[in-house]
Length: 426
Image (cartoon, rainbow, N blue to C red; front, side, top):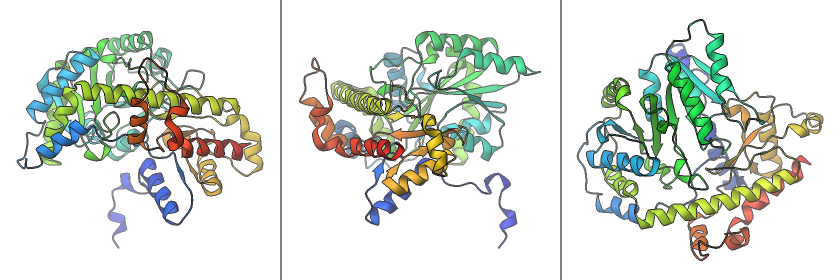
């Protein structure tokens, strides 16, 4: 009834691929099937105790807060950027939202111009632009380039365009989802130089910045402060995905975007949950407990990412060693001939068949903006007990190297699932 009244931009749109695979995995498990859940990129680590306590202490907070965010939290976020990232952010230029995902949607709504998205990319960038009706231009990267955008990609776009000065927003995500790669200082500086020359605004999605495996994340805002919006939040480095709190930090030159975003927020979600904002202050203020939590989270993710990388590489699967986050982006193209003989011709069918026959849940590269016929997929190595892993890591002095044996049986399912992929592909 009345199906013709459905907005054309939402017709045929399904759930986010990451949420869909999580729900399907849960259904298969409920039916008694063993599932290796490498689909949803949810932090395995618990929220730090001090942050949980801060939330409990503020459970009574019930008032609507300012649309842009709790001032004390804005100060904490700005201070964290200033101290950790070495970028100058004013507290009143910080916007707090119900997850960085919502803030990205509103930014694309208020910005009128072309959206540049490197591929592979996070699954929701393009659908958000499609819903709003923004023109998206994918910048296809390659395995040889570590799936990273290079300066020549931007220059090629400018040269091809009859209007090099048109408004453009480049979404840069690093350490990256889905490939776990980052950028060197020289690479960031080169991209910043081109963006400045052609007035390209950069949305720097640094949600995984705090879990760069070496703790050496560099924000491109250091090199292009006047044109960069830094996006972050608590979901990935603080284990608080379900808390739904994200942050955007603007330079003074881009306040013209912040102001309409506030207006849209005031007419949609009003403000972020008060107890959550009060609790988040503790996370951003940092301190010894937060520092220790991050140090051990990073060393655990590093040893797991490196171990899985080595296992897959030894099986002649094209893959890069992860530099941050908790993702790998294996390329099974060298097995194309044998896959074709099994009537598998695209990454979607590849992942569906793998799940049905082995219980291993991966996401297809096509969900991340790649050619469907390319046999790439995302593996989120989060299928372990994060609290136990933290406790195991804390037993090993920091001057000693953590190894896979230190994590014991907690990661058996993770390694078993990876070996299931190799046995199946071979």
